[in-house]
Length: 625
Image (cartoon, rainbow, N blue to C red; front, side, top):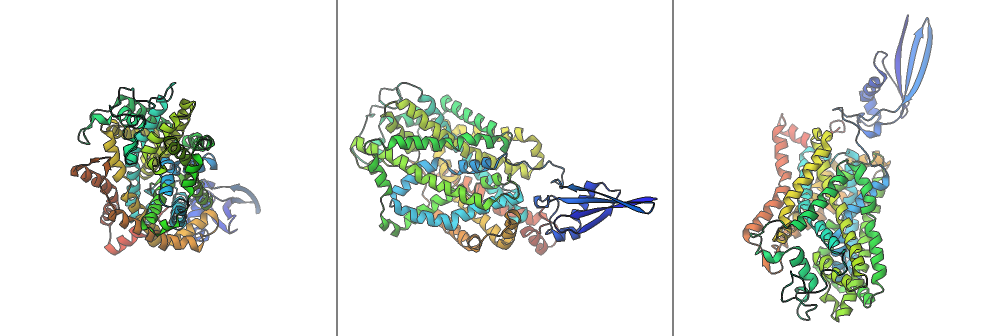
């Protein structure tokens, strides 16, 4: 007579679990890992959790004619999902993830906003409030999102299985990323249009002899404010009349048809985005090797050229000049805080989506420090490039630097192109510059799209098998909405979206996210999750920031955002009341996801209210798996 048992020996605890021989080894292994005693030893985690993928020894003990025979094998449990899904994909290489995060965070605002803010708000003195808010809020929130996504391995909505009543904030950030995509892709299409226009012996914005120029066009107007200086230059008229054709529109209620030139450029951008994202991080992780590194190469080349120009040193000195009296102005601190909120890319769901494809044991703490630091250093470095050329323009036209310094689209599509047009080999420099803008925009747009795609396919599991088709649906939908921004009056739609889509709403989303993690899920529990991944709990500083400092900072920013709200305008054009109402509806549509989902969750779960509310607010480790 023969018989036997299967012994499973944990290489963590060295304890022995016994099961029936007739059960298959893999089934026995899973069953044993799910048993109460196994869960107790490894922290109550299910076999779906990556931290349980540790070697165990299967020992088969047989007895025949009174003699025992044993055999053993070492097995690493495979990570499975209850629904039978395949294991979640991961980044091909660690550098793919880092470049993706850097590429998303380092966007056009690093070039066209930070240098101007620094110059306007005390030069080097502006770095004091900027770095202060970076340390107490920027980095902690950045770290929090990376850890949240990596531990739960789902998108912006799915991660809230840890605290279901807050899942609405996941849909909030997904909607915000979608709204931003409606107009951000248009900026990239402008850059592409300029790039195509640069392949000529003479750049089209160097003179006033073009069909789109007005009688008021002149090489330089030496009067008035900075807006007056540039209102009739060839570069300004090329942007507004040659590219946008805004002269053919009377306002947002007179848009006209989409212009085929910009529509074609927008279609190319959408195609690039689709083929960068359709296969997930395996493809996007390779694209960022070009899109995330190219801007640094171009910025370095432009700096080397810029510092050789007359007046460049004066521009750089103005950029770095220190005026500590500016620190007494509350507006300087508010602008530094606002820049931190938007420059790191927290609150768009992108960091959560990207980190969800990391290996479970990846050191997300180190990644947060590295990538957030690189983002800030890039902003500072780009200021040298920008102000070397602004100093050159100031010297060339013999005007004060503040007459040519500006931020936003006017810097990269008006002032910089005009400066480039005066250089020998201007077409080559223009091609280089607009390639940089194109790559800066593409990888940031990829991040926003990935947030939407990952967030929704993780929430609606049936979409996993149809990622390519769903990605096509998202990018085509974005393209169709973006067509409003490439009409003759598209700049008005663009301005409205830019003003309302991701202003107060993104600050509100991050505030609710921080409250949900720190006060409802709990800083201690969140710290334990991080310890499971990287081997140690976050220091007291990080825990204090998450629980007290960052939420207070965000609450302050939300209040300031409402208090200092100004209706949008474009130049002298004032938007009608109905347009502002549409803008507020857009902003509220994302913010209301938080209370609406909370009400839905409380109303749909059976049981007494106190039990239902407790289940919605806090999940045990076993329940959230």
